[in-house]
Image 1 (spheres, rainbow, N blue to C red):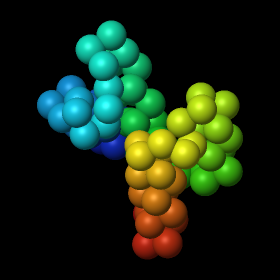
Image 2: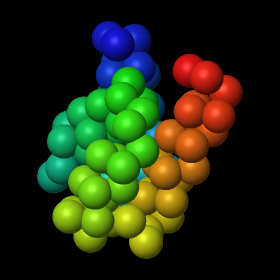
Image 3: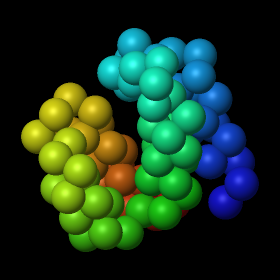
Image 4: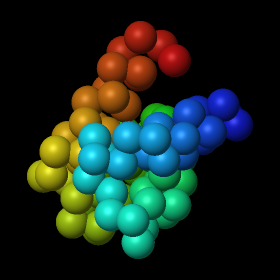
Length: 75
């Protein structure tokens, strides 16, 4: 569980434009992406994205697609 959190956090740190993260909230976005990568309960992820009004954004769709792919592959 620690590896996906680190990968998500570092991914946002090194590629903030890819994740549409501003410099003000880059740490929070990195932590969120890390948690999403480590926990693939699709309904929970979808609810969080809806509550944060990120579900219909590019990053929201990427998160949902990634979670679906991980679930499909049995990860």
